[in-house]
Image (tube, rainbow, N blue to C red; front, side):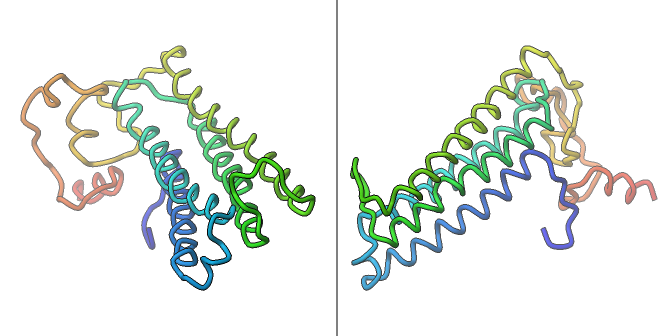
Length: 206
């Protein structure tokens, strides 16, 4: 993204969140792979936090990004992008608020799969529980915003290109796509590495 033109759309927010969360998940796996450290961290909440940063922070957040990106193309309706951005921010903050304290719990020796625990762990558990509610609400808002687009019937134009992409699915077929993808053979009018509609139009008009 360096020196690129980054558009802060809902899919991009989820993509950026994915990069951050999955990186933390990967880096914390290094500690669990070191025998000297894993003796202390094994079967603690550190493992729980690491697992969720990899699986939910990596898989589910990336899935939400892809879902928001392809939604208008797949169904021909557009969701409220402001609400989607707020929900994406809530997912990111809520996720970190939920699982980052669990790294600290694991470092302090809190074992996983225990229904009761010492009083010294109560504060971090309460903090984690509070932010898990924010995370759940944010995901709920994100999903409902998508489905609400069907009710609002905020249909996109057949040739709509909300992200300004230059790939074939955004420039040469309708939303949702034709049963055979393209009604006629697409004709390219730009280079293979041109991805931004505005820049392409300026370049090729010259």
